[in-house]
Amino acid sequence: MTDAVIELDQVTFRWPGHAADTVAIDELHLKSGEHLFVRGASGSGKTTLLNLLAGIHTPTTGEVRLLGTNIGALSPSRRDRFRADRIGVVFQQFNLLPYLSVIENVLVSCSFSNRKRDRATSAGTVEETARHLLRSLRLSDDLHKAPVAKLSVGQQQRVAVARALIGGPEIIIADEPTSALDADNRNRFLDLLFQEVAAQGSTLIFVSHDPQLAERFDRVIELAEHDGQREPAT
Image (cartoon, rainbow, N blue to C red; front, top):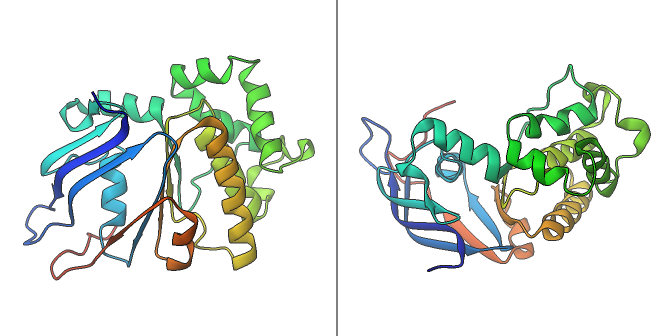
């Protein structure tokens, strides 16, 4: 029996036709509430690693176990369900829906997962939970019904975090969410992210090419680029 939330054992991933592995990790175990910083240059396999953790890709060899489940052994539809129920993602470009309001963007997560909806309504309505998250992330009530496209980059970033956190997913994946921010705004954002992740006890995987952020995390791994390893363009 293990208390690890995330377990990677002898995991490799190699794109078809490539001579080298894009990802090769002998062992990685993360417990509930740990914060992992994944650093690496462009082409080092950061995005591929995130896709393995999210069940979008399956490993070429080895096992990726999340919450005790070998997600590579699941069917594609069950991997999609697992991801919707147990993982929250903050994308680099936020991936907000411009035709929806701030609060509607946050609620999108619950429309794909009954589990998240049930957890979000444990202390009230799902909309009340969304509003509480937005307030915690310093987005005032007068912005909740505003079109998300009208918000600043920093405000949109906080909406993306609220969408990832609602419903209490055990795992939060953040894919270079600070790349467009200056140092002051980056640090303020990290303070808010850590505060909210800690409040619900989630395990955080944060990917960035910026080495200055590493000192703020419990654990750090670095992915190195090797000849023949570059990820396909997406």
